[in-house]
Length: 284
Figure 1 (cartoon, one colour):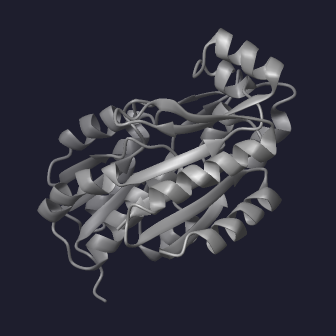
Figure 2 (figure 1 turned 135 degrees about the vertical axis):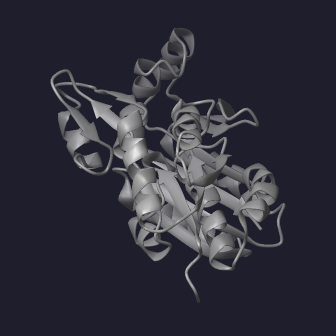
């Protein structure tokens, strides 16, 4: 298959597995993990494990890629001979990365860009990027991607469970009352992104096992709406549980063409803490 004449650029929080980044020749723009005395590039100069290991002493903050880093990646795209690119980012409702990439891309002479706001996070965004990658590999044009991307975004969701509400609370993603009540009663929300691309709770469960069951049920129900789909099971320092979830879903959801697995990015680790399980579904 002839390589696509259109470059594919993603941000690091789309969580596309490294082997797929390589397979499709994707360019990755890293977000940042910020500690009091130093800043790291997501997945480049810091690993998820390093974030977990330092939680006891400091919970870092995160930020969008710098304009300089974003520009450097797009300049590399041009230097590699591309005149067109698709840029796929995590939800504009959760991060300013989409706006940043749009702004930097608009200033790039000689590079025509289509920018896809996935309205999703982590592997939810990654499944959108992979669907676009398959389109480009099959010879799709920039206009084809522009036309199809809204449907792909609409037909993709991620459902995730966190082991503690503490990190969502610290990052300002949930309020004091939700945090206090949830922690007191051991209530675990199953979270997804709505049509605006912001976090919403789709189910609540008491305890870890029940929350995983409800996340699997939500993913199974969403997948049932499509003749075929691709699915992902990702985790944050919870590989054994992820493997069990993957096995159970494999037995329950018959219409999956492709499975993806992996660790969430260090930036997402900061917001969710250890113990995240995420299930992504992209309908075809």
